[in-house]
Length: 132
Length: 162
Image 1 (cartoon, rainbow over the protein chains, first blue to last red):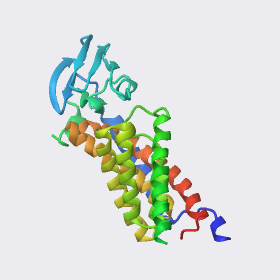
Image 2 (tube, each protein chain N blue to C red; image 1 turned 120 degrees about the vertical axis):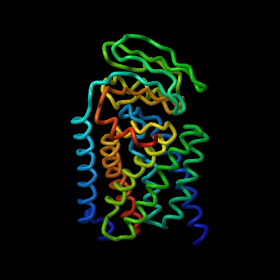
Image 3 (cartoon, rainbow over the protein chains, first blue to last red; image 1 turned 180 degrees about the vertical axis):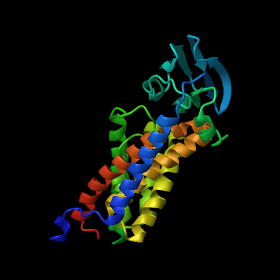
């Protein structure tokens, strides 16, 4: 009975693990902030294949039709966002505006990814090799 | 005793399913897929301590199947599965090592859950750019894992398991 009321006692391993995870998050975040570059172009990928590419400095609104439904892509003032979609959770719309190379907006239900690439962003070299 | 175990596992699966429904009602904390507390994992973690990884994995699979069929859909099942498998494997190993309390075991589970999902998402979408979300997912996995670990810890102590 006494034991069942004992308070949670974290072990040494817990502290190291949690500290390690937070440190890893911080390092990743620092890398991202340090390496990010202003984007140059917007790439639309459907089911993993590039289906369109737009310049980031030209304002436009495009309706992207996929087999799952549609998303409305807006490029304005160097920023990109999805203003509308008929996917169930609307996470892609809630993602908001992106502007840096390497950032992306993903709509998993429609297998759609909108991402920004830059001229010579170092992040391209870092992440470009993963998953083709 | 066998009946009691069977009943416990059945109730656990029902509870985990309800918790995933409750979680689906909450508004997303952030607009990144995968950032959530993972309430059903309280049940799974409890089962890992009460019985073992087989029972925890079995209930987890049933929960995923039912929640995919009822609420989230087919694609979500595979994302959930990739996270759940990696998370359970990591948690089991850490638990067996004996160097971590359920807090650490749960944090590892939370982080691995997110890593599993983002890896699958990156493979499906063939976009390594998803890994720009890594800091967010590492942080949210740690926090979610800690919350789940604390809650499951209360259960584990009350039920007098270990």
